[in-house]
Amino acid sequence: MTWVKVHDRVQAGEMPPKEKKRPNAAETTNFIKGVSSSLVAFEHEGTAKEGRATQRRLNRAEYEYAVRDLLQMPWLQVKDQLPRTAKLTATTRLVTRSKSRTSRWRAT
View: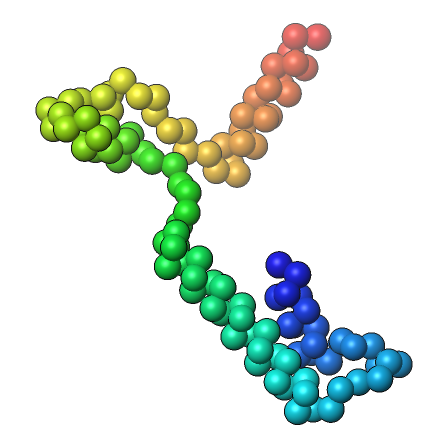
């Protein structure tokens, strides 16, 4: 966010540049407080409207519960028909990558 960067730079004394005419300390403090309150208000407004997490992926059980609620079919069982979510970690990616490389080397 551009205004967060502006706030941080003015607060750190990096803006306006030292060779330019600078406002007095009271004006700078008022500006920082104004920008800060606007940023906080914007953040609170977004959180109130959308909640903290705006989007995330549902797991299989959550998806099943959602479908049951939407279709009003509490007996519905679809979780086992959905693909399992692979748990990827840095190690998993590294192993997968190294397996694909070694298979290429073995083929030649």
